[in-house]
Length: 380
Image 1: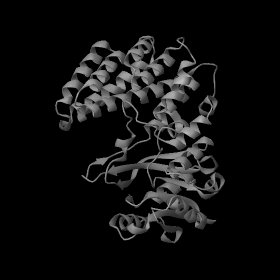
Image 2: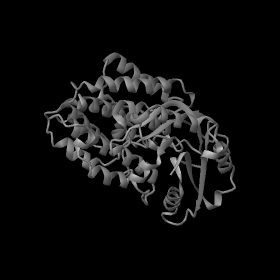
Image 3: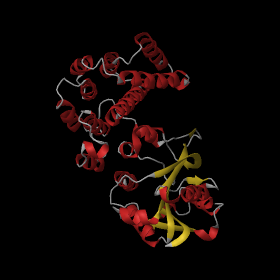
Image 4: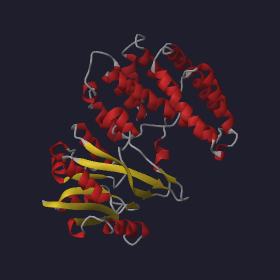
């Protein structure tokens, strides 16, 4: 291992070696303010039509790396010139108590030129362990990690989401990562990947099979210290539901009968997404006293306020305004009202695309806020 050296791992499809996205990524690496003699770029090509080709390329680059620190990046990611210098400095300043790596914010630019900023809010609210099981905790090229930590974690696994699984592995060991609240990169993509992360109203199937295996092996006490209440288990039920595994989530929520208002709420979400609207209403009625409904209302109101400012939603903004007025009047999240909205949409002869986009955005805000509230109850 070479002291202070940073090894940059870049696996590129063989057909893309001469593309502008690769050239721009390489140029941003070469333009770092960190000494060029201390930056080692390991670009490995692979054949995308060969199963496991990308993972094999990542592992080959990892095995060749000689640096004290490693960064995995992707084509299309362009770094701020100060990126590496700031990340290494952050770890050096932390001394022995510093984390095993540092990560920063990344903006995402789609083909239309729209730039979307990302943040670490979810990590701050539910911790790295839980948030990493919801979605990849940071964007490509954001994490700089100590090479000895990567050696301990082992090789990338031959699955489609190899890098995300690696981040989960890191988080599951309770390792600390320094989070830099700075935007130090832009990820140029054809389409914003965040859109595919918003769950369907009625799942067409499980989202990630690798995540199903990991969650099945996870005990509630692995997520948070168990305090003799239902919330650690409900946190796990929520994670299964985020992965669209309704059956496993239902098994956990149902185990609490009707005694837990929080379990009743999660039970209602499961049935609404089956969809079994009548059953969902019954469970939501038993959850009307749950304190998490206030947080859900606030989260949904933020979504509605954004929708009302976006002209592309067209007449769907009238629906958003009606929901906002209802929540203002009720002063709390009304699960039954949202069930009615979902049922009317499902019965429409020709579903409206923007209406579905609105309902999915509301559902996403609802589920994230419910998970955050469940987490807070679990740790308190």
